[in-house]
Length: 277
Image: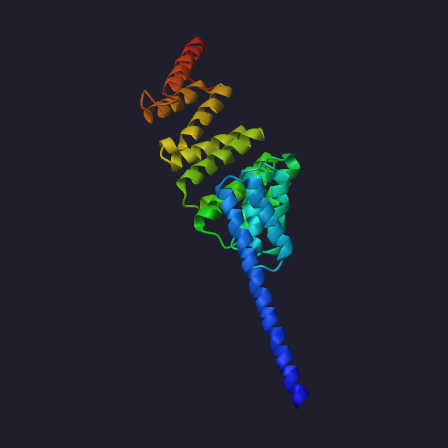
């Protein structure tokens, strides 16, 4: 029984030691993190990063590891302008801390870097946005990421996939800013594919949806250009007139639209016909 008592005391001492070491590591890690934030506030970015890297290597199970990985990536990304280093730490966070509060920001930041790295980067960003859209997002975040996904599809010339994504946004989205941009991108994608009839239909649908307002101004200008390219001068003139109707004389595009109309009317006069052809 004396032996058992000694054994219990020994186990208790080990437990205390474990608590003390754990508490010490927790405190030391927190100290490194706080110092890093202080360095960051003083614009001492290299020192901030070094502190955070020491934290991740010395205390790999610390509760501030995901915070540290995000801030290392963020500092490399925005302040030290070292995208490859930023990619490394954002990826570490995304791979090992899928339930982190930083996962949404980290994935978005990683995708944004990839967008500037050619077609290979665009494909990587595409995969990230597809994963992002499966996360628990606010309505605003979902709309924003859905729109970005479509833009990437269009950049890669995956036009049909991009239109599918945007049509889903048109069905569910409430952000009118993104909705009218979505209509424009759908029409523009048909134009890039050399499908003028579907381009015209898309732009006309947007004009109807937004009741020939300023929200569909970009669409109206594009529509007028298409009519002009096809030689449908009267339709182009009528479209430019709707553009003038929604602008004040001192606003951008008013004088341009006026000038285009004058040129088209002169061309129409030379053809001696008011009909489209």
